[in-house]
Amino acid sequence: MLELGKYEGAILSSWGVTIALLAALVFVTWRRSVAVKRALETAEKRASDNG
Image (tube, rainbow, N blue to C red; front, side):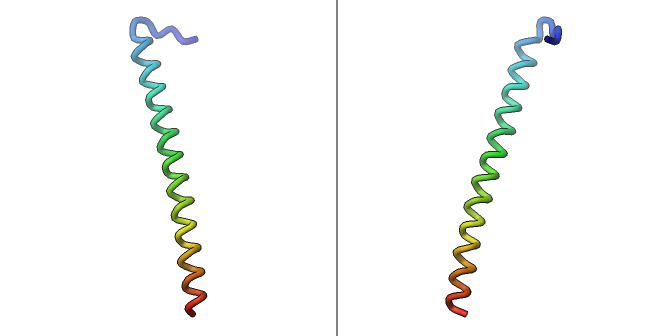
């Protein structure tokens, strides 16, 4: 493991928070894309039924 000295706690917790926030951002973006794709498919189906 790296020798981080007296700042080890701060550095590792910063890395942990950063990784957690990036994971949350990826998850939220993925969920949003699923919802938008579903809404687009619904709108396209509605348009083709009317057209």
